[in-house]
Image (cartoon, rainbow, N blue to C red; front, side, top):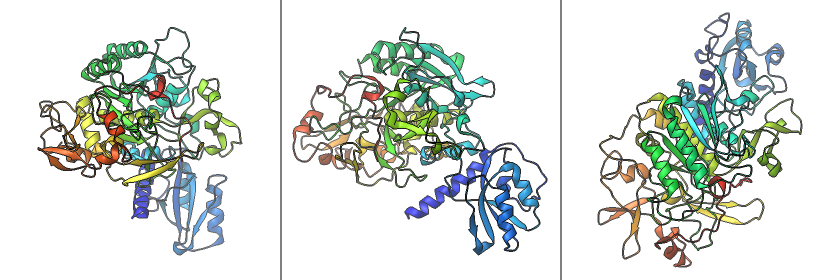
Length: 576
């Protein structure tokens, strides 16, 4: 079954890649020889194809080799007198015009030389959106972070797509840290710095033509304050109409000290949400924290603890195009939220070992984490052992968050009338919900093993699925209520259950019911009409009741992680 899923996804992906290629090519090739989905290939793009010949001859290999991408191996398929190769779209006509060529098709298997975004885009089915002409055009995404350096991957038809840069630290530096540029690349990078004849990988963001607005609220080492963050959010709201800001990405956080109802950060993100901006926030990177015997539960960072926003946890793409083998990152913070006991995260997305845009080699991140520099040879066939000056690897829920921000931008491009609540509900309902019961990860530095359980407080409503979200037309009615993340409670017997609320989308609706949105794997039965969470005894640890007592206390425990940027300390090293 796993291999079938891989093959299906690979086929779908490569079928879509060629559709993306755009404007028409020369018409010299006979239409009967070229597969119909090659007919719109844009000049200059590399395409993976299978060339079937009328007869098997040595000349076939020479012919194919003369047109193939330099440095790539041919794959002979004698069973069907064919050769698989990578060619420039300009050469398709030459291929088809050869008298011995019978047919040219897309190669429906992913090769290392294919144009990819290093798998995280495929895990969430982003190529489906691109094939439908959705790339975030016209949507403004506010990046509340350390600033965005305007490098080549943010180019557009009319110049740079970084249409605004504001500094709220009053230090006169644009982006000394580098984190914000990496985040922005996952949202909206277009791969310019890795596109061309020499490149075997192209690193593109989810919404490659969205406009980026940079709000620098973190300093040169990635630290900010509530006030600088709120100032950035405030400015973004004031500019909403001028730049069509529909999405706000917040890949930062701090410990929860008080209820979201009074927390200033939470109040600020709620204001943006109610102004019509989809706010996407990192869950935090403290899922390994067992300081209070909670097995990493109740570690969601603020403002990800706010019920309105979309809070995102991190998955590991596992170096493959299919999501079937993807696993939760053990460092991804888990719910319920401190004090208010809300179900978080809302969604999970790829966030481990993600290659994205580098600000400059002078950025703090580049020098601070040399192990995360990208060898140029990783994506450039002419590259050597030197480190890339345009791309970098980072891991954490900060990287998963912009994947969802990009997904939101695509939904809003498809249907600008959607409200933030409708976007959140759609993404949660259509999320992929097939997970193992548990998985174990090993810290590559310490060798310590961490076991994660795939419950409602670890994966939320599931793994974001852009194709499913764009294909779904269910729109929560504005009269139904907000898509606020529900609270959980416990009864006298210690059972934990979702508190029903008729004022929210999934309170009493068949379409948006809790079992539909979160899936039956984490909700099984009822207590007094309320949905009970499966495995609640596992959630707080089975060796002691102390974790249970901590989670269900009325005060947040003293945080064991630093109140710094990037969702409570970024996990830069990632995990295997």
